[in-house]
Image (cartoon, rainbow, N blue to C red):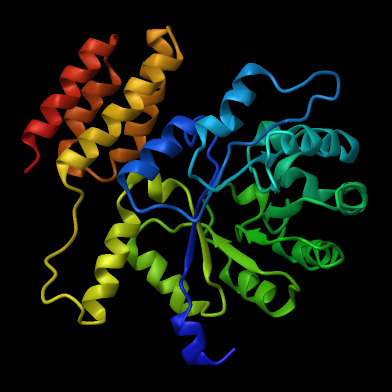
Length: 333
């Protein structure tokens, strides 16, 4: 691809699946108030061979709960037949693309050889993918992966396995399972993937600021797809900020004094989420847990209001929570 052609391509952005956070309620609120994502990935489904999808899982993928969004359900499994059964269940809801999770670093998950823990068993991984692709011919299947379980060198063998199958896309978080989120991303191994993968690639990992994203896009110009998770929860306006910076650099706007989310937009976004969680659950403690979890990430965006945010995390009722949130937005300029 010529350089000029590449520069004219529009980058694609995906919202990463984050267990307990990027639910259909969060996805819809984000889509309504901020820069729309090209794809939204659900928190993972664990296959259950002896029953259908439970109520929580159904709520997550009901077409009515995802209208206007490109949603990709994600499956966490190390059993090919169970995975195929779950794909069939998801197809009945109209889904045409499924993502397989070989990236989750959770120790609980990895200890059962699921997520990135499954990468330690390359023969089983190969058989798993063979079972899935032998049975599923009419659905697109992508993979989200880490480099391996223990050492990044494991990725050479793992990538050679992925190259045998017709993946729709390969999303790479360039760490191993044992890195969790502590070790720096291993960018030389993502570069290895660019040179050796037969699939379209998507980069995931430490895309927390405009600067992070720009540096990665400059370093990997052949990649035009970017999956963002924690950085987007901490700053839902991140892509709006990125686009404002791009317009400034292209001299399409006269001035740029820094970007910040209007407090009215952020307040409406959080209120929307809270209202819909209240409608979805009669349990006040459940709603509080969900909202406090989001504020755990927002602390990074509002560092001048940490004491107020800590008060939010100590609230015991929805009424108290809303009062503390209102105080914060009253203080914001």
